[in-house]
Length: 324
Image (tube, rainbow, N blue to C red; front, side, top):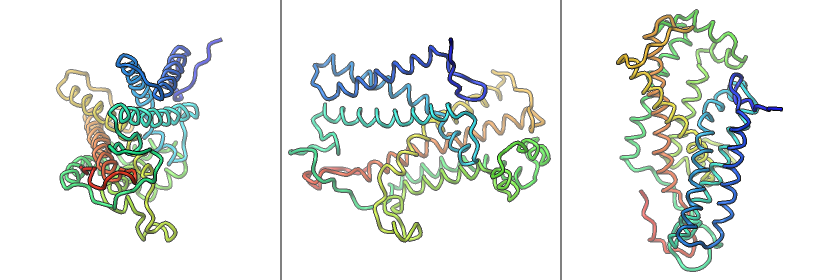
């Protein structure tokens, strides 16, 4: 008997795909165990290739994580099995990437924990650097990418506040959201779109990645945590896990809108709440700018944060690391 695993209400994984994914998971697990052994050059290449394949597959499978997080915030779930699959893929990606980084450092003769070159064991106390601000060039790039959210957020806010834009009327927008969950409808009644709210959450994460309050809990956070060090992975994990899906989705939307605008692809017929194809294409382009900009901004900010907050083993000399 064939058993399909629902990925969404209308899409299911074929049993063959399930078996292939299970095989990739076993391959990644075997490669992770193999990193503890010594191999010649061919063996090392096999281990690294297996890890790269597994990480690529699981990264692709977690690409829809941002959408699931938005739906969870709206207290709505399309598919429980689909959400579980995406979350497991995200966990697998993080674990396998951690193994691959440590293995790569070990092959280069560096400490698998901090990446530094120092004598002694790897079980000593880790020293965390002082809080710092991202480099000016990084901040400028992040702000420019972040500004891609403005057209998309502005149009959705106009609709939510009862205005007309891009061929969508206020009545049509309300009708399209009639089946949403109660919290989403309550926010819409107050003039707040839940997806714009999620976008603001992404902006908050970006700012935390660039400024000291993302490394040390500020006074306005909570009295209990104020002044304590922020766990390094607390902002890094959501940033890395959402950045890939957002960036890829944004690029696809922009590519599609561009191909339609130059008539390489046919314009899609308008679907409610849109009354014109041009309005639909403009909103797709705005979505590409917003999602892609946010995704690439998260990549830049997370890279800077990872470099600035990377701990070093206490045995390592203070002058080893160069912060970028």
